[in-house]
Amino acid sequence: MIRLNLTAAPEWLELAPGLRLLVAPLTTALMVSARADPVIEAMPDTATPEELALAMAKAVARRAVLDWEGVSDDAGNDVPVSPDGINALLEVWPVFEAFQTGYVARSLILDAEKNVSAPLPNGPSAGAIATVKPARKPAKIARRG
Image 1 (tube, rainbow, N blue to C red):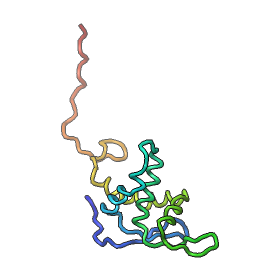
Image 2 (cartoon, helix red, strand yellow):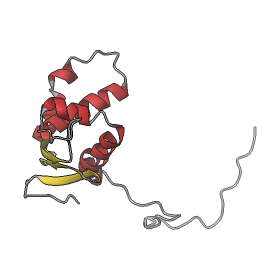
Image 3 (cartoon, rainbow, N blue to C red):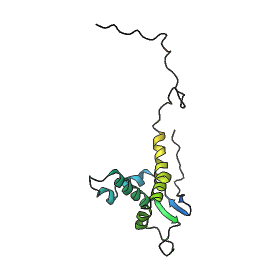
Image 4 (spheres, rainbow, N blue to C red):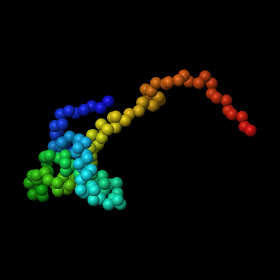
């Protein structure tokens, strides 16, 4: 089952105490646009998965972040949202991880929901129903030669 959020309204995402981002919903259009980002397209074939992940996260964030609270410069002045500011913010490891978990991964869980299998027939996820009766006796061992 897929649960649809039909409001398509931006929502606040808390990344750390005192740091919140107002983000647009992670839609197909946003992801397609991020994948076509010039920075992503200009990456060399030799780029590592880590480099690609960071570049993609920044591309997504540049499209998704509409406003923020708790971001300031060295002097303590509030900094307006900008592409360079978003890139700098995602260079902070805990912020990057929180963004990936709270925004990107949360939306990818929806993708995983549509690809499910029955639980295993034993163990903590027991629940699958047997489709045939168990064999009465074990099979005989085959004769050699």
